[in-house]
Image (cartoon, rainbow, N blue to C red; front, top):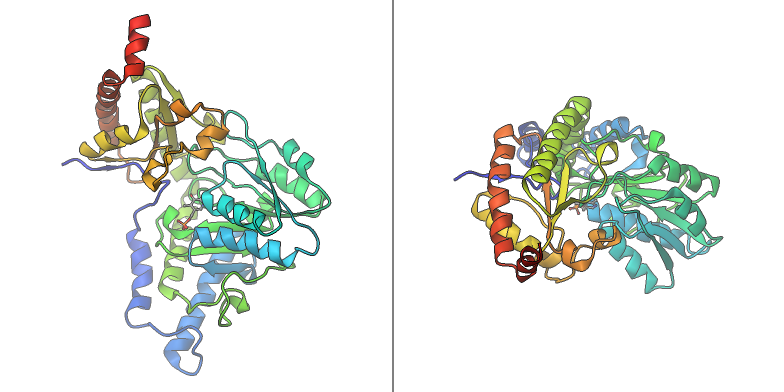
Length: 393
Ligand SMILES: *Cc1c(COP(=O)(O)O)cnc(C)c1O
C-alpha cells in the first residue's frame, strides 16, 4: 500500500549519516564520558566536547553555553523553571504567548501554583505576537520573556529580533523555543539576540530523547535535574554520547544545505496549499501566508467536519498527518493555538496539519490532492451541519 508521511512537525526520520555517526558510541566506544581514568572514558569525554563545539559553532555560541538535555520539553522546562528559581528574589513575573508548546505553557502553569504570575500574550489572526504587546506587559517584576521562534501547529514565525531588542532594553532574560526552526530557517543566537534557546534532535532528522539548551554566559540558572557533575554541574545524567553525536550531525546536515532545502520545502508546501484551496470548498488556511510561515507547514480547517475523522480516513489511504484538535491526546478541547488565532470551537475541530519533509515527492503531493477531496466530501455528506448549508444555498 502507498505510504505518505506528512507529519514532519511531529517527528522526522533519522538520516543515515546521523545513525552512522551514532553507531560507534553504541558499540565499541561505550565508555562513560565522566570516567577519566581509562582510555574509552576519555575518548567519550573528548567526543562530547567535540559535539558541543560543533553545535556551538553552528548556532554562533561558545561551547560552554551549550547544554545537552533529554529532550526539547526538558530544555523548555529547564529554561523556565531554572530562571524562575534563580531570579525569584528579583521578581515573579513571566511573559509568554498563548500559542507556545505545552512544554512552555505547562511549566508556566506549574509556576503559577508556586507564587509566579504569568502573562499569556494574545496573537493576531495569523498567530503572530505583537512586540508592542510584549513591551506593554513588562513590569518591574518581570524576570523572563519566552516566545517561540516558530509555531509547530500553524507555522507562524515570530518577530524574535524585535522582541529581543525590547528584552535587552529592559534587561530581561529572553528565551525562545526554536525546536521547529532548525532546518527551516537560519538560527544564530546573536542574530536573534536571544539569551536562551531550545532545540530537539528528532525534529530535524536526529535521534529522539536529546535536546539542547543554549544559555548565554552570565545568566544564572538553577538545576532542573540534580545529581552528578555532568554538563558543568548543571544537568546530572551520564552523557548519552551516541545521541549527542546524532544531534550534532543532524544539526550540521540541516544547516549545510539550508537555502536549497528551504526552497524545495517551500515549493512542496505551496503546491499543497494551492491544491487544497482550489479543490476543496469551505476551507481556511490557518497561519501566515508567505515569508512568515515555516517552509514545511500546512494547516487547514474544513468547516462542518471533525479533524479526527479526516485523519482516520487519510490513514486508511496510507497518509500520516495530524489534527489541530487535541482529541488524540485524550482531551476533547480543540487546539489552544487555533483558539488563540480566533477560530470558533466548531471550526478549530475540523483542522488538518500536513507537514512536508525532504523525502516528500511530487507524487506524494499529487496523491494527497487526489485522496483528500473525496474524504472531505464524504465526511460532509454525513454532517447534519453541512446538510443545512446545502439546503439553504
Ligand atoms: C516537539 C516540540 C517540542 C518538544 O520536543 P521533544 O524533544 O519532543 O520533547 C517543544 N517545542 C516545540 C515547538 C516542538 O515542536
